[in-house]
Amino acid sequence: MRKRTVGLALVLVLAFALPSLASPPVLTVTAPRNAHSGGPLLVTYSVANPLSNPIALTVQYSISGPCIDKSGSETLTVAGAGQAGSTQTNSFSYTFLSGGCAGTYTVNVSVNYNGVQLANVSRTVGVQ
Image 1 (cartoon, rainbow, N blue to C red):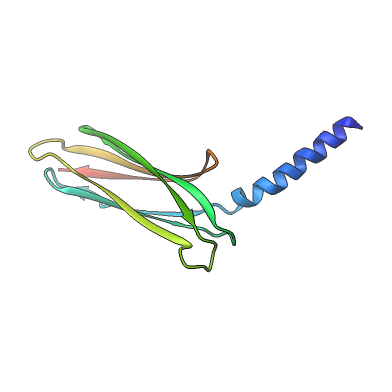
Image 2: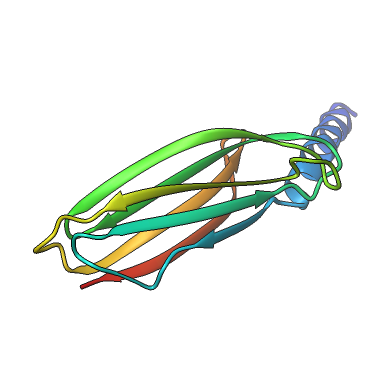
């Protein structure tokens, strides 16, 4: 009898937690395929909330490659679907040193909710 009560409590907790995870945010990342030594790399990302209620999300981003390992994060409160602010668009950039640092770089953007990764997008950028 006691196990049944614990199981029911677990099911109730999961029922409240899963709606947030069942419809993850939509993450779109735009980055050029190529960049030039001495030039900038601009990465734009958008996070859309498909849920009806606002949600606080943490966005983590990074650029890594032969000459850089840069990362950052920010917390966004994204309005519910159909409301103003239900999609948030931001960007980050890096300017490569001139005369070097050629190679392949990886741009990674992830969206987290309460420490759980809900979406992740990676792009590679060639620097000449």
